[in-house]
Image 1 (cartoon, rainbow over the protein chains, first blue to last red):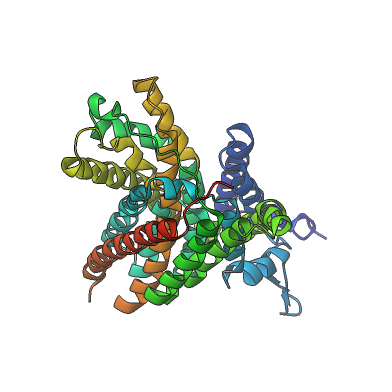
Image 2 (image 1 turned 135 degrees about the horizontal axis):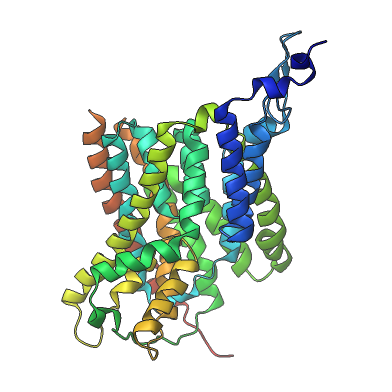
Length: 382
Length: 41
């Protein structure tokens, strides 16, 4: 028996496999040492190592002797939870159970920033088309700008499953990098005077009935206007209804903790099943990583410029600090914290946190709506 | 239709759609809050 048949992996491994193992180890490093979205990046990183060792039994392989498929666990997980979109939807139930919509009731006009800050999705989609991606792939890349991992996974698993790995890595990496990406863009677009604008606080309590009715109302309106968005919005709102109804506290806690943790583990490692060298070590991946950054920059641009536009019409004393506009992305609560920190740096007496959180919650709704609209519009026009 | 034309159309319709959704949700919040205000027990 020769060495090749004793150690087939050594003879089968390619430089692309080695690159992917290095990518996997880098993701593990970023997750542990830098704490960049460790919940997702660690399982994805470990999974990337797992699937790039040749002949891995974690993926379905064809037995060279019998010609039969030997099922691998990660392939089974992928088919069971990603290909049919179940895992991202379960994550939405968990996220819904974590979201408190009461800040929106205190200053509902900040909800509009959740729309303006989705601009990056669409501009990035145009950029991806110009770089040669087809429309469905471009839409999936653009949705990185939702700054919402499950929405990115949901849309790309439907439109471009071949790009799921790089899109997920880009989405979660840039979400973790919000504190680095947003401040320079905001400083570039605003003057010091604008960054020092104070906003009135809206101390107000919200009734339980209102908080219960909100997810139901949103679901019904979304379903009537864009039924394709209903799975995304509906599961998010279902999770929120469990939270707010007041009679399912145990389920609400289970959704926020156990469900979220279990599905996140499965989601991360299942996505890694797509991070094989043949799919990942390509020029496309680099372009997706670059376009993801563009998406986050234009999201920030959209939110800030919309706030500046609103300020033209708002009277003195009612003006909005344009930095709050940048919180219209879904990266919650990171974006709100970043903006509050920037506000404090400019003027220690300026407390923007409540407004920033309201806009950020609006961004969580906006990103899901954007995902739903992409799912509706792309098949209509293509 | 070419991809670029379709992408531009989706951009226009998409941004308009998101704003329409958000404006509806804005009015929904205002209406719910008005109909079911917080009452101190």
